[in-house]
Length: 250
Image (cartoon, rainbow, N blue to C red; front, side, top):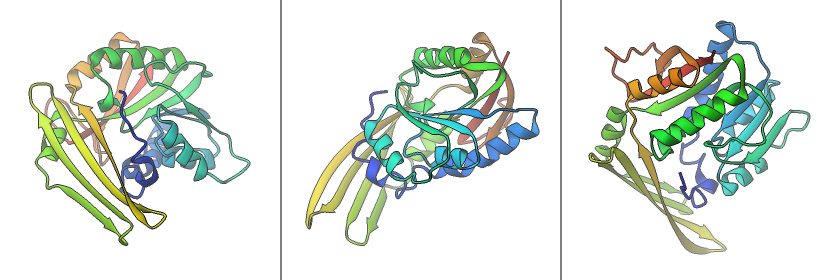
């Protein structure tokens, strides 16, 4: 999970990389409240530049925003200017989640595919189980194997913005290791001259059935599964590029 997000941090939201978490978070909170969830303390695990965390804090939730990237958290702090809201920015690892108070909900959006394997998923679920109060919710999403493969078949992404930013991205899927590799080549103007930075993001595909089995082993009951449009997902019959899982701690 040692992915270098520093080159992407200044452009993360501009590139649309925060769009899913920002758009789905209000729907997930609405779903939870409509299904007997009551709580105030929410951990946004893998918060990125803080789009979802800003929304949560502005709605009165006591929000802890955790990310492993110091650069992403720096951008997140810079973009949250409101006072009077309860939000804590913390750098840390999803697999340890140390020095945190008990939570009523853990959100982990656009992050689990970046774990190195099922053992890392186990570490995350173990810590989530320890942090959550009984009957509270863990909600996370996963790009499915099908979704990752389809992304690799898409055209190369190119972004040009006012001659000040150019981003080229290419994606390749490794069928043996079940990993999608996305390489970013970023050109941007700074002090009138062009600068270049590069980074690579690895996303690993996990069978949904393996994830649900791990949830049960670590004391969670799968309450609901959705696709990226919040439509009910059935692992036996549905197809989706992304799956959202809501699991309740026993």
